[in-house]
Image (cartoon, rainbow, N blue to C red):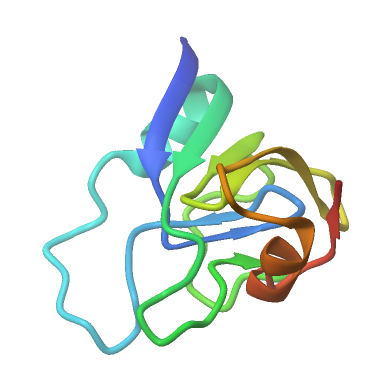
Length: 114
């Protein structure tokens, strides 16, 4: 087994659900190995942008994209900060320089605790 898997994400829900393999309506070449990685890893960290190009948050209460795996993510790192999943919220562990609580709260599609 793998102690730590670090991979990219398209969306992460505050309960640790991960979507990282497809966007409906977009052409894809296949799933890749993300499902295998998260199934075998003791800890999963996701690196992704905080919001999509259209401004919609990628840290959400419930996934809107097809899931890769459920309840697997422990931590998400974005350009705004570092966030741990908390079941019904994200917990901000560290803010990026120059970023305040209000900016993070506005940019996140789920409750955030600081």
